[in-house]
Amino acid sequence: MSLYETLAKLPIKVERYSLEPHKLVIVGGQDRHTTVIRLEGNNKAGLGEDVTYETEDQLAFQKAGPQLDLTSPTTLDEFCELVGGMDLFPKPPKMEVFRRYRRWAFESAALDLALRQNGLSLAEAVGREPKAVHFVVSQRLGKPSSTKLLDARLEQYPNLRFKLDPTNDWDDAIIKRLVETKAVQTLDLKGFYKGTVVDVETDPALYRKLASAFSDAYLEDPDVTDETRPILEPHAARITWDAPLHTAEDILHMPFQPKTINVKPSRFGGIEELCKVYELCGRENIAMYSGGQFELDVGRGHIQYLASLFHPDTPNDASPTAYHVDELAPGLPSTVLEPKLDRMGFRWLV
Image 1 (spheres, rainbow, N blue to C red):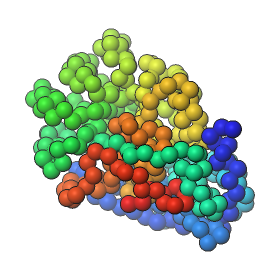
Image 2: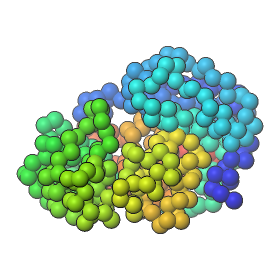
Image 3: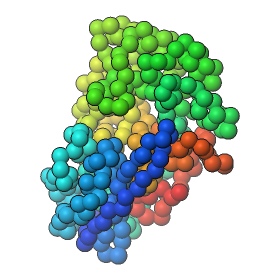
Image 4: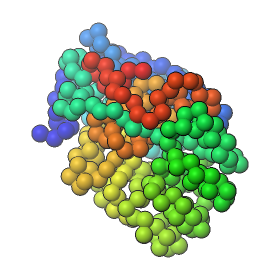
């Protein structure tokens, strides 16, 4: 029986749902909006979080309120099939990939609800033992780039490790300082982002410097061109993929066949496709790590939970939400998260 089949047959009863807005001023002073979806039935509730980035799309969703009839499915599989055929946006989203993000929010809420209605935790349902999650903190270095915030965080938490987004103004001094910290585990080159606030101009010279200086770090989502391919080829074992992956099949058709990938559940949209990803990576011996999307509530716990079951020992971008802000509180975990799973459902307890 496949991983998805073990979950698909779970009975479910949805009677109603509601939406809960969340907002936080995150690192760099940006307003981050998300929406928690609460499915209810048989005196139980399941939660999922829509991580769509565009504020306008989030606010339109929240303003429209619950408009969908989700009451007919009797199994989790029927619920996923129903949601997969619905338009979940009151008006077209700014980016088509956001449709996958919202689908994951509804399906993860349904998974949580179905497990609770059947008296199971996700770990029990899939027969996996949760383990402590190694994590990194994802951030940019500001505009203009500076290591000031990173240095302050390391002074407060010397054991922190990072996933960083190199930008075109990273000069030799910044690269030298970052190498000195020995704290950088992943560099997200953003090679597949076009027309967004995180766009980076492809610079072969910068690629060459980064690949050489950070000799042990993952190189995520490079833009593979005629100019960059010769630079990247000697480092193929360290190249990972994230943004272009939307199906399990996509993993097998990248410019460099990966030994490791970034698994963002919402990028794959549905539970079934995510399960296919886990099974394919198991068969092909492809390592995985979590990708965070500045989740503000239960969605962060979902990626921490999944990491604890499927890839606990990799540099998971799954730090506690307390790391989303500029000023860090004292007493935060700085290297690993011990499993804190609710007795039932798909919840990581804060």
